[in-house]
Structures are given as structure tokens and as C-alpha cells.
Length: 167
Image (cartoon, rainbow, N blue to C red; front, side):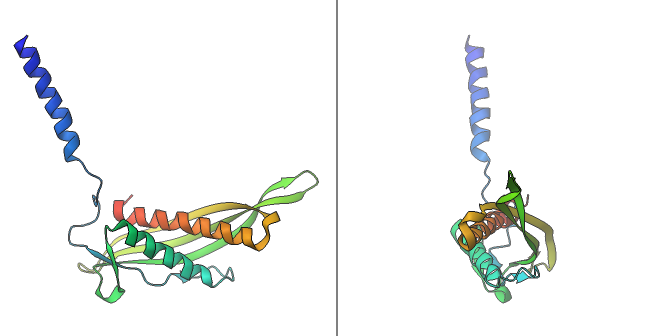
């Protein structure tokens, strides 16, 4: 009976002890990186709305600031840099009602991103990201703007996670 009790205590310690040692916080950020530069996003989409690059840049900076894993600094003095280029924005039909009446459209934003370690002068990763958001055409321009903002919000989440978790 005593040996069973000791065995159970060992198992419990192993299970609870190991769980307490594991953490996701900053697991994939190299220890020497503390700051990140996020220059103004470039827009090569030809979509025709110049404010999209500034909006996406601002969302990205806000998300990194709130997260706190890396402090946002000027590119020239940062440990790392995240460069993003919008490669395409599409606004295509998604659903059509009987009689071929268009009801919903989907905005898709595609970007290329490069994450570099400026201290060691090496590329950490280079990836493509894409996000979408649907909207009703009955909402007009306001509905399109809302869909663009939603897609940008999802993209900034993806970029943040790509940097801090290296997925």
C-alpha cells in the first residue's frame, strides 16, 4: 500500500511539475531580439486606395505594442525588422441571387512579408499571407471599407503570430 502511494505521488509530481515548466511566451523569439522596426507597408496592389498601407501599418504597430513581446522602435535602431508589401487586393463576387443579382463580394488582401534579424544580419523568414472578408453590396462603400478593415485586422494578427511564434 505504501509503495502504491509513493508511486502515485511520483506520477502526480511528474505530471504537475512538467506542466508548470512549459510556456508559450516568447518561445520562438530569439533571446537577443528585444525591439522590432515596422516600416510603412508598401502597396504594389494597384487597388487605388492609398490609405490601406497606412491603416495596415498602424494596426500592425498597435498589435505589437499591445502584445509586448517586442518593443516597436525605429527601423534604424531596432534589433529586428518586419517588412511587408501588399501584393494584391481583389474585390470579387461571392454569391449571386436567383436572376443573377449580385448580393455579396469578398475582399482578399495578399502580402509578402520578410522578418530579419538586424543584429546578426540574417533572414529569419520570408512568407506570403492572405486574408479575406465578405460584405454585402447593399452597404455600399462603407461596407467595402469595413471588409477591408476586417481583412487588415486578420492579416496583422497573422503577421504578429508569425513573428512571435514562428509558425
